[in-house]
Length: 326
Ligand code: SAM
Ligand code: SF4
Image 1: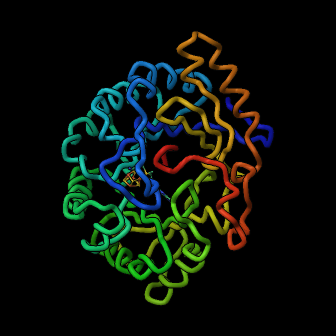
Image 2: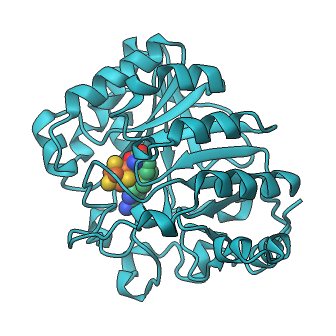
């Protein structure tokens, strides 16, 4: 069991299998020319599988593949297949553009829930946010996955002045579609132009929804980052993720492996442990993993607190989100 000094047990590993992406979401990928990690510095397929097995031996039983865009990686199908054969629940976070090519892989791997990112229901705004004209493809693939019996959770990063006016359009969508919408507070990462006045908090989100709909809380699991709600008569449901205004660090069970094989014990951790280099040199990786977890800070990587309104993002030392793996 991977216990930290605050008694938190870490059974949930998020693995970034690439920092490459076919989108250019400004809040995730820095505007300046982003250099994707050269393939030789990425974990190779067998390395991902071997390192994953070490984590499973240490008590990890939930794995999410992410990126960058995980389905952009050429051997993504083989990685999914190999990890699905381990004793874990496997999840995926994707921008949705290639899901139609992975229908069989997803079915064979037994993936039951997929998070698909979509921040707007407006074609023009989609182009502005992602710099790619692929709204129709993403929307179609969301419906395709639902049709195939996959539970779809839509990740919407809510940014004040950009898309908060669409929150209730997303709620409308849940009326006749069995979809779950996750409204996520905008977080600061290197190069993403975060300012506190762009954060639309979970309370503001619920306030806005409450003006048009009456909703009731659903039961959450103890490690859930999301507070979930349902609306009577709606097939779908929704949740809010309050990382900035009300962090949920006390019940955190998550750790992250970046595409270049560094272990991060928090999304905002400054320190990383280079597992890939150690593994390639034949060193004791298990000991490094345990030490890394023991160094986990109490909240938000020890870099800030929930007083996000007075947060200067310049003081945070981190990677860009695309380089961490969301
Ligand atoms: N490419 C995939 C996708 O877009 O779903 C997976 C990787 S992406 C980094 C994972 C998630 O992180 C996405 O849902 C994205 O919206 C979210 N994300 C990226 N930058 C963020 C930010 N600054 N604040 C909050 N969420 C962010
Ligand atoms: Fe790519 Fe996902 Fe980041 Fe958008 S949020 S740039 S789709 S990795």
